[in-house]
Amino acid sequence: MKKDFLHYQAQTSPHPLTLEVSRASGSYIYDKNNNAHLDFVAGVSACTLGHCHPKVVDAITKQVSEYMHVMVYGEYVQKPAVAYAKLLASLLPEKLETTYLVNSGTEAIEGALKLAKRATGRHQIVAAHNSYHGNTMGSMSVSGSESQKSAFRPLVPGTTFINFNSEKDVDKITEHTAAVILETIQGGAGFIVPKNNYLEKVRARCTAVGALLILDEIQPGFGRTGKLFAFENYNCIPDILVIGKGMASGMPIGAFVASNNLMRNLQNNPKLGHITTFGGNPVVAAASLATLQELTNTNLIKETLEKEKLFKKQLKHKHIKNIRGKGLMLAIMLENADITNHVVLYCAKNRLILFWLLFEPRAVRISPPLTISNEEIIAGCKLILEALDNYKK
Image 1 (spheres, rainbow, N blue to C red):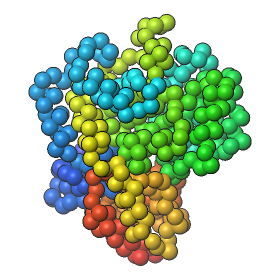
Image 2 (image 1 turned 90 degrees about the vertical axis):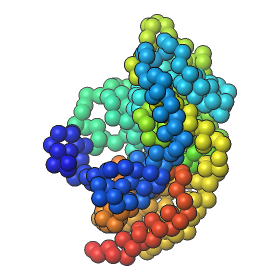
Image 3 (image 1 turned 30 degrees about the horizontal axis):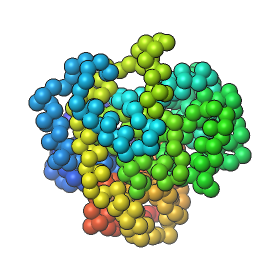
Image 4 (image 1 turned 90 degrees about the horizontal axis):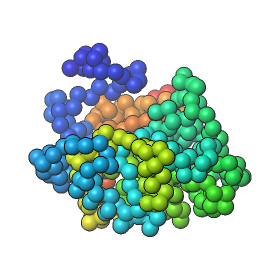
């Protein structure tokens, strides 16, 4: 199987981890020999409720038995998508009332950028250095890592880059700016949180010059930071909210959310201003609805902050410089990339799943399911400390 995987399925890195998966449940992924691997990554923040949560599985199974795909997005009334969008609107600020469902986070970014340009009639986008918004041409164009982009130029023109958390750079947002796009918490750069009311200041500047504010919550959304969405921690409401990853507990989905008036710009001049065949798929929408209902009917979101404290209490070691992030979106910052590689690979051999971050080689990702237990956290942290104790230069 591994040989076929490497030959017949396209790879994204020279050395994939090649864990052969047989099944997954809760906080564990099981290999072909039925060994349990404790998952501290959750499909890169996607499996919000863990693997194969029974309520999500039930919702998917029920919907599959009724219908799976009937028409392109936005033409037929399909209960799972409508129910999901209505529940989501009830949980968001008033002007974030209308949701456009797509297939992934990067597609949602594309839709948000198109909407901003269409609504403002402007072309300039302001984005942040070291940001990551996806890998399609438009989303890559507003991502801030040149090492990821240089091989694919030319990209979509018109993007100006500023430094995240730099108050002086806020003045680069002008009357020519269609939109500012920021990750609420920078992911690939090392889980960098906004400081000194930075997002409030960006919000105020956007309002002053008539630019739209797009917040990318693809990774921190859906309870991972102790709020349903991370922007709720920072007193900053975007004009367009972009979501994905954890929406459907492992099923492929993304969305962008705005006011109904703003979203109507995609209906005319031209018609079909944004279109998708499988966006709003009823099976995936049913999984999203079950996920959101579980998050809002339990204490899982509130518990993320207590679990963050437990991680930080357990993870004390001479090689750990600090732990960045918030809630269950954490990055262990080590001295150098060599230690990071050692920890990730040592833990992989000992059945604890960790991973790297895109642009910060000193960081070890910790983004487990929100359902992870305190006992599982303690067990995993013990192995991380063991890995650090066994590190030799």
